[in-house]
Length: 163
Image (cartoon, rainbow, N blue to C red):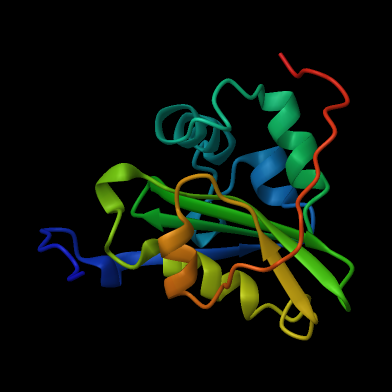
């Protein structure tokens, strides 16, 4: 499928590699050029508007999530947060991608691939043996960026409901 024509100059986006635990984003709302930009609030808005799995997360839950993340990437077009992704793992054997999200109006422009590439190229992840991702609706996208279905069974145990 061809990338759609857009007035958006994707070359103007900034990929921000946050430090472990995303302290700048988590505590100060830092965005592009490490300037305060309301990044935490913008991340909540991105989740609320552009996902079904991350709607209504509280700011406290998002802060805790960021604190526990090994790799955090945010994508900005000027002062607008347009994409996000994070990863947890042991740095050797296994890692899992979480919360890969791109604002709807930026789909099919290469933003998601930039997030994946940024995460996979980090020092922490690039030498990991296997990287997992779980998806409900984007299997085709992940296949295009190198992920394959496997024969393993995913088991889930819900420990509690988060409200």
